[in-house]
Length: 161
Image: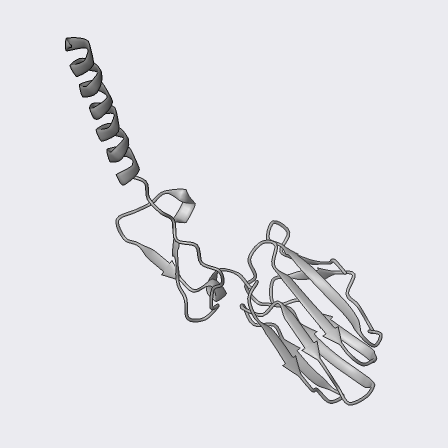
């Protein structure tokens, strides 16, 4: 009889411990999408949590979110903002001249892409202050895309498409 009581007490204790462990499990919330300008995420600098919590919008952390769509005329210019990755232009016809300037303070690995539904005869691609650009496109075909990838170590935009 003592063996049964001892086994029961051991099983009960194991269940209590298991219940305590399960109760301590933290459920991480799953967020299907983030609004780049309204939602905030916690930033843990250098992976070391501190007493003062820091939060930022996704748009401030990277330019992965956002796009710009426009119907430009010949001679128009466009500068990528921090939160813009894609610029899509849909002009009425061929554009003789168009100028883009890539993002001013991009994160390492940021992309800036331009898509045009029409031919751009003369395309000027500028890097921002303190940056360089490699293999700048000079024209675009209809339904063409040109993309640049930023490398923080060299402060250079490299053509990636």
